[in-house]
Amino acid sequence: MTFTEIADRVWVARHEWFDVNVTLVGGERGLLVVDTHASELAARAVIDDVRRLGVALGGQSVVGAVNTHEHFDHTFGNGAFRAAYGDIPIHAHEVAVARTVSAGERIKGLYDAEPDDPHADEVQATEIVPADHPFSSAVALDLGDRMVELVHPGRGHTGGDLVVRVPDVDVLLAGDLVEESMARNGVPGFGEDCYPMDWPLSLDIVLSLSTSSTVVVPGHGAPVDREFVEEQRNAIGIVAETIRDLATRGVPVAEALAAAEWPYPREELAAAVRRGYEQLPRSQKRLPLV
Image (cartoon, rainbow, N blue to C red; front, top):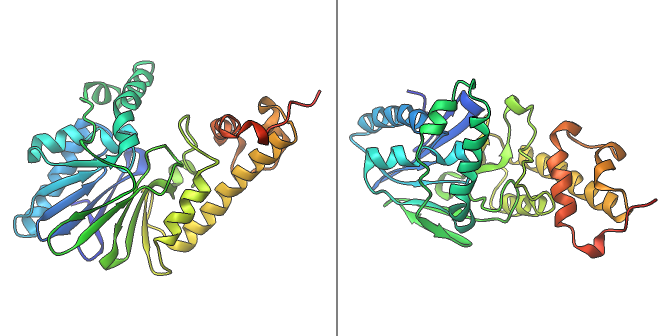
């Protein structure tokens, strides 16, 4: 069994592919799965572990799922969980719901260009099943003897990020708003759909939902504490303010990476800088200096 209990009836399974986490939250009514892995095939292996855990718990079953955002490594197992457990509700932020199919098709295109990747066939074979229970700001899910809160703190890693709060045990599942994984040397995922100027403020809200004792489960890597989240928030804040400073001084976007010191390797920040320049209002940008 790959699931490890990190708090009362909260189990995390950390998978080698992408170092991604799948989490289970147990309640009187059953199990809630948070993120469903990166392919139908990978999800079936997760489901085998879930079933073994369910048997150990006296026959509990999955009664719902949550996608912390729209990326394929968190959503491509949705169909497998539906096949295994019936028409369970799948919850996600409304932006993530709207973007899951297009984000998944984009990834399939990238894998199509890399046919030698060992996971290419299973990604291509996966049916994209978006969540069907969208929400806007926050929603509470009733597992019988405990409530689980889904909160959209704002944009960051994507436009559809959410965090999952299990208040009775002070656990917060942060999705890819927080990343610890050494597979990326601890660098957050500044991808082509990130919002670097919003991300620090979104993490401020995440921090407001936590305490000094909160266990935070990142989307990738080992569980962390509030101090880790504070440090990552500050580093992302430096990225945002450096982008703002460069744009305000009229440094062209093509020269921005080389024009400043950054808290993360430059090669990890190309999309963040480009996206940041795009997201700044015109009033905060000067014409490039000549």
